[in-house]
Image (cartoon, rainbow, N blue to C red):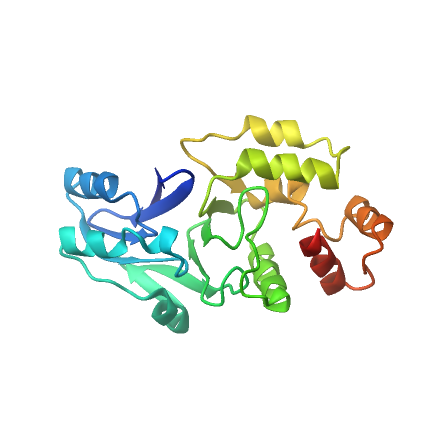
Amino acid sequence: MYVKQYRYSADNLGYLIYGEKEAIAIDGGAVDQIQAFIKNNGLKLKFATNTHSHADHTMGTFELVRKLDSQYQDHRFLMKKEKMFLEDEEIIVLHTPGHTLDSVTFHTGNCLITGDTLFNGTVGNCFSGKLDAFYDSIKQLLSFSDNTIVYAGHDYVKASIALARQFEPDNPNYETYLKKYDPNNVHSMLSDEYKVNPYLRFNHPSIIDTLKIKGLPVKTELQRWQSVMTL
């Protein structure tokens, strides 16, 4: 399976997972570009779905379905099935609540399509109010191997690293991370995220020191996660 990224609106990122004959659109707001790629490569759009139900991610879904004579698959249905298939290849659908209660992440090959759960350099806002659930979702994503590629729902890279510098101003890894940044193909490996993303580094001594200085709870891992999320 291949993963192709599409930028739309100001900073949204949508995706096409495709093989030799079929494709699946995820957060397909870049309708014209996706339609052109499908037609130019002789593909059939099997269905279109989303990472969560926020309007900036669902805005192109039904237009794609209509224009390409495809089907809509509700991501909430897919997360109950926990998997889907494209040309006999398995794609895992992980329920990753936190940003929203209905957020999902798609795992194909060595790639995670994370929507607004995990960004390159940061994480999403906890609009669900369920920080415990968000913690469990992040831990689930951290269970993947270091060379797993993170494809997120927005390009917030530069702003994320600017914020990370406030957490850990002496972290030496920011410049290397930014040199890898490509606005035409926004991604990172989990190994990169461990080095710079403060929301994955809640167990790192420098982050813990920052939390202690601010008088925030650090006794347990969950407390450290909750404390980082309040900053």
